[in-house]
Image (cartoon, rainbow over all chains, first blue to last red; front, top):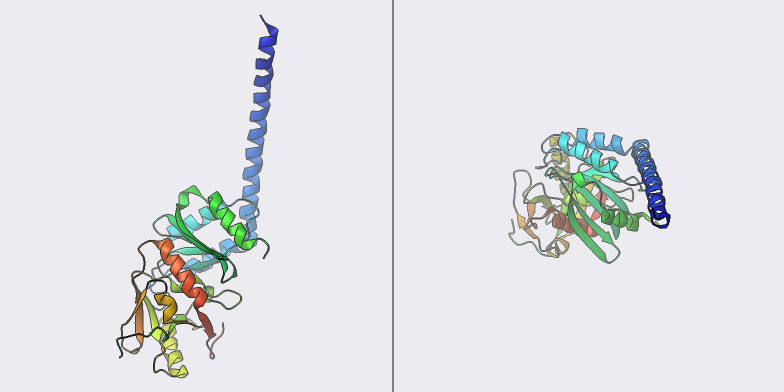
Length: 160
Length: 130
């Protein structure tokens, strides 16, 4: 048997096991950190604000006009969406829209703001004004927060 | 009631939720998202300051909420978003109007609402708490 041919295979197999082990541990740590980020939202009162919004806006016409009520499903979708946030994201201001959506907003000034709606249709919709740049679009809320949205939130919140 | 709404006419959107205000007393876009195809506003036209507040107080009383204030915006800023303002007088509010012609997609609606909120000016209810 030619050892010079075998060795790289043995080494790469061993390295592969180590790489797998490290990747597994990294994933464990990432999950742990993500839980701690969700706990941070709890500490900052974001989840409490969600419950307040739900109780304030769960009746038809809560805006004095024709507002639709916030449903329990939208509340759960908002919680799950927040759970998907990576570490280091500032806690948002929580609000409600008259079409039955819950909003998460990061605001610095009228020219530096991003608003995300968790809609009754299971989608999230966002709009942002960041200086002269305007962005808007949609994502499926089940997929969690996208890298693109994280980047926009950081553009609004970084540097104050 | 005049059927034409001039671009320099002011419109009021009553603020019945404290969560429609930022900490710096600017209005959030949430206040300008329509529940369906139209958004209710009140024209300032011909009303005294006191009369504008009385209409708002009646709306807040109807839902047992505090009237935090109102967001005033010039019609030109609404028209700039390709929206229309049409008079829709109601019992107790002959100055009632609707903002219509909203884009079908929610994200496009949000962008319109952000732009209107950016141009709006919050006026606190002199009788209430913000």
